[in-house]
Image (cartoon, rainbow, N blue to C red; front, side, top):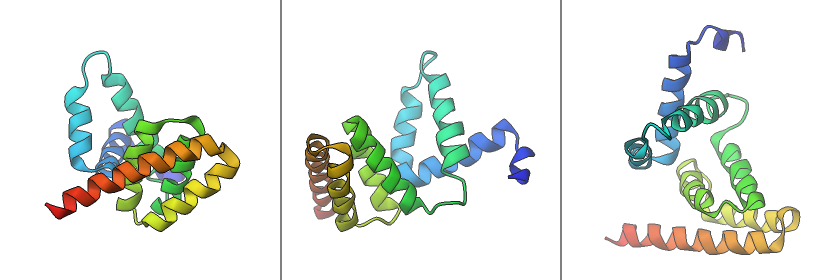
Length: 136
C-alpha cells in the first residue's frame, strides 16, 4: 500500500503494539515486555513490527479470519502454548467457542487427528480457566 511506504519503523512498531495489546490483552503484552532482556528484546521488536504491525494491521482480512488462520497454523505445527494464547485472542476478536471447535475439527482433517486432539485439550483448559475467572 502506498501510504504504508511513508510510515516510519516507529509508526509500524506503534501500530503493531496497539493491535498486539488489543488482540492479546494488555496484561499479556506487559508481561512479555517486562520479561524481555538484552537477549530477547530484538525478538519482541521483530514480532511487534512484523507480525502485529505489518500483518495484523492489514485491512484485507477481518481479525476473526486472521485468528482462524493463526489457530490452524499453530495446530499444524504443534505450538500448544501459542495455541492457548491465540484461543483467548480469538474469543477477543469475536470468534465463538463453537467456531473454535469447528476450526479444530477442520484442522483434524488437514493437520492430523493427534494435533487436533491436543488442540481440543488445550482449548478446554483455556475455556475452563476463563469460566473460572468469570465465576469470581
